[in-house]
Length: 398
Ligand code: G3I
Image (cartoon, rainbow, N blue to C red):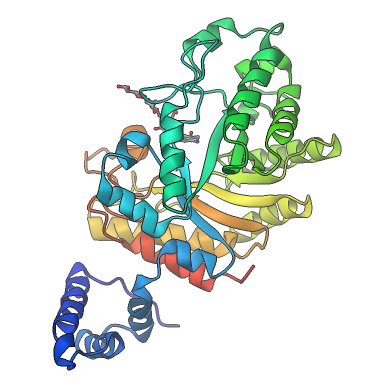
């Protein structure tokens, strides 16, 4: 099939203008239908038939295209961004069926941390995001009950082998109970694997491991299952998608951990592959990734793509070139992962370039704003959006 080219902003404007004109003429009943307009545009703008079809279904959002294949699409957001901009909120409502608080369900991130001290839980921010989600037909995905980062200073200073079980138990019992029945899925344990730490099991020497041993992982999943059996229980991690030695060793350690948990009867139900990609990355081996996905599926696990984005830190400055390379990375990756039936959905780590962790964590040397996400800073759909849309359209039906 001929490669669908990217609609230039000019083409989009023309198409938009033509639509307005069409609507404007509607009362005179002389309006060109949208499909006639598209064929006019196609002839005059020499766009491909595939693009014309894509234009036809331009109104199909990412969540609708995903749902048409039995998948979901969602995105992470920060309370301070989402609830302070109606236009941004409208983009999430249009494109997403799942919302992930980027900060608000961690122990301590953002201006009002969930755990201000040992004795308190502050659900102010997370409850506001839950209300937003429920009011707009989105499901809320919880991230994350146990992680080695974004922990409050009081926890880091207090936690020890004698109190760790009680601290972990009270946190999960309180937080999971607060949202019981209202959470799509929980990242129960996040990023427990760090092969370079040198342990034979590949686990990370975190504050939780040092206090409770590897059993902290089993405890977290068992507690979550006890408190909210309806939330899908996910183990979430990064650095698993490329044909590099570090990703290969992490894939092996991840499979080993999942096997141990399942053999122990620990109620892990799904694996979250964060999928923080790099534009221009050549060390991508589709067959090796397919094998990893199948190995996870063969363990009976569902798979979620949980934090998808594409860093453009190391590709040329030109925005059109960068957008094309970012879109190519989305397409190359999603074409493989969405082929695996165990994959049930995709979440991007942010929706608009306006708000991305990559601005601070992976900035460009030239200082240009990064462009890693489906929507640009003006909430316009980019080639990345079209690449994700096309990947859903091409995905096998679940
Ligand atoms: O909220 C404070 C603000 O009051 C203060 O002025 C500012 C000063 O730097 O810091 C703000 O805290 C920031 C925090 O996000 C929000 O609490 C931290 O600086 C910042 O480092 C922190 O980064 C987040 C990081 O997780 C740690 O929680 C990123 O935004 C977030 O995108 C990132 O997300 C992680 C996932 O949870 C797990 N997978 C990797 C992913 C990317 O690192």
